[in-house]
Length: 240
Ligand code: DX5
Ligand code: ZN
Image 1: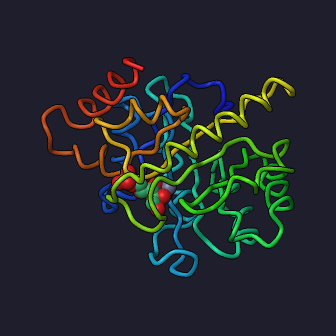
Image 2 (image 1 turned 180 degrees about the vertical axis):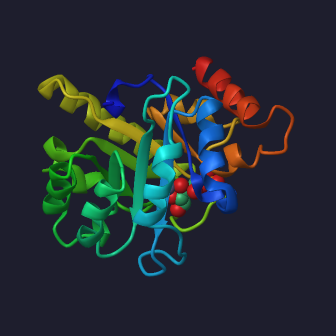
């Protein structure tokens, strides 16, 4: 499935906040509760100060990543690793659909974007809170997704940085201008501190794809569970 042909607003639970001892079940449950993408955070204790999961776990999760209609769900891999290129083919082989990386972590950004696409995946560029959008200037044709970090990468459960709203609006303007001239849509994703009470204002700033880790998996034992929180996030989006 082409990730761009999914609903206008997509919710992408980050499995960083899932119960890692039951990862397959957790993935199945959030998809049954209406998640659109599975966001897969890869950290290397080098580019970011934390260490998480790699291609072997992606491969293990792949069979559990099914939508309620039985079709494959999108696995949205967020690479917080340096170097980037060496690991890209492994994730493509492990079943990733989207692979995004931080421009500061690649010596040859244009080449890395091409490499991801050559391996059959959609390519994304990720912008840390202080990273300028200028990295997009000459590569829009090679980008399928722009990911705006609304926290500094490395950990779940941090607070949303409000300046990200300004950057989202800037990115939205670039995407709309590019779509008008090329006819091609680029997804605009936001990652970090997205909650039921701020998702509407984030959508108004221009985001269409929302990573939510602690907000979704933190509702494991709450009233209504994952279905309850997914419903509240959708309800807030419907008000936009
Ligand atoms: C942070 C990760 C995020 C994180 C989001 O480096 O990229 O995907 O898991 O978690 P919350 O939604 O809890 O901020
Ligand atoms: Zn992420």
